[in-house]
Image 1 (tube, rainbow, N blue to C red):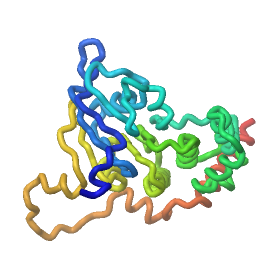
Image 2: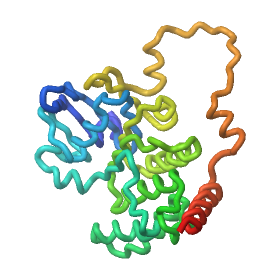
Image 3: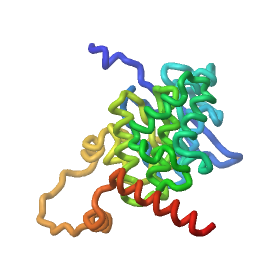
Length: 275
């Protein structure tokens, strides 16, 4: 048996249940997330995705069940779990009064880390935000603000990061920016559990996909494994029409740092002119 096969999952969930008053939200969730992988928790609104993430990040206690995060028992040592994780919620939690760099320096200081300025500069470079680092976060585009938010989550190098619907409300270009950022996290060895209701997002990002429905995981596996659950495909010729997203990206091009910088400059100019 290989070392990979014997390695404990970065996240292990067994029988997690949670109800709010008389409403059961999680009805016995089992889930494993391998270290250094991206697992997408896919489900519709109200399926219990955010509730599970809040439990795993120690913001809420389960009614029943157990979980370990980075090998630490969540119930017995919630403080140690918090030291091993970072959580990025559905909306970017950046201080728009501060510059991008100042946001990063602030979090590094709150974590009592040495050389907060150097940490901030390194993360700005990693997330292609160096040119925008000296501007107020209020001038950032949606994609830039979300990338800054994720960069702030990585301060202190947490081995596990939870991303709760990271592209909610973003335009197509900004979504692709965030997807590229998430892929880089896993390439660097970070374990990522993300929740999403977007099927294409799960397809693009996840090593494995877990489908949460009515409070339970009804199926999980790689994309190919899930596809094999359906009957064999009958090959026919179908003329595929481009989607609106295909048309949009073909007309405006793929997002780049220059594009996002230009949009933030225009936003800053507009704000100055309205004063």
